[in-house]
Image (cartoon, rainbow, N blue to C red; front, side, top):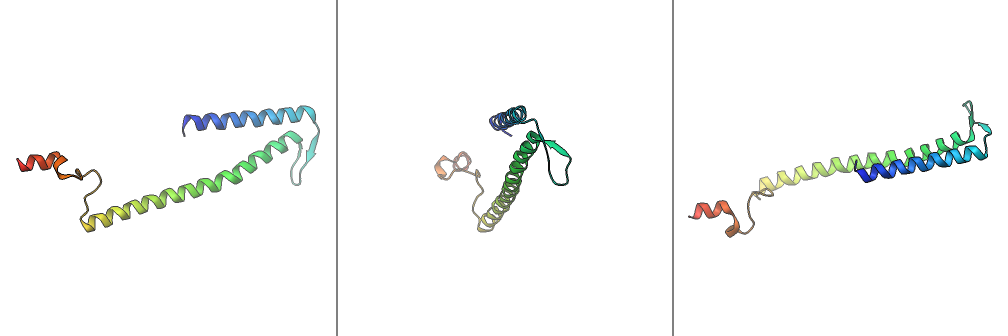
Length: 108
């Protein structure tokens, strides 16, 4: 993960934690959610934030993984087709023959 992305996530987490603490100080009452023990209302709100984040983040990660995998397969297929057609691989030499150092050595 890039450093800036880590800083953004940390800042978002600190901001959400601040909101939860500020909310808890104003309303210290507890609420009872179905099938759970009584929770402070701030914990319920923070849990909602986390659940919403995960519901948006997980499908995006799965899609990114699938697209990356598909991109890799397509690149391999392109390389195989280029190999069967006899097209030189990327970086195999200069496009302009006069600028290819190996071709200059062969012509001398």
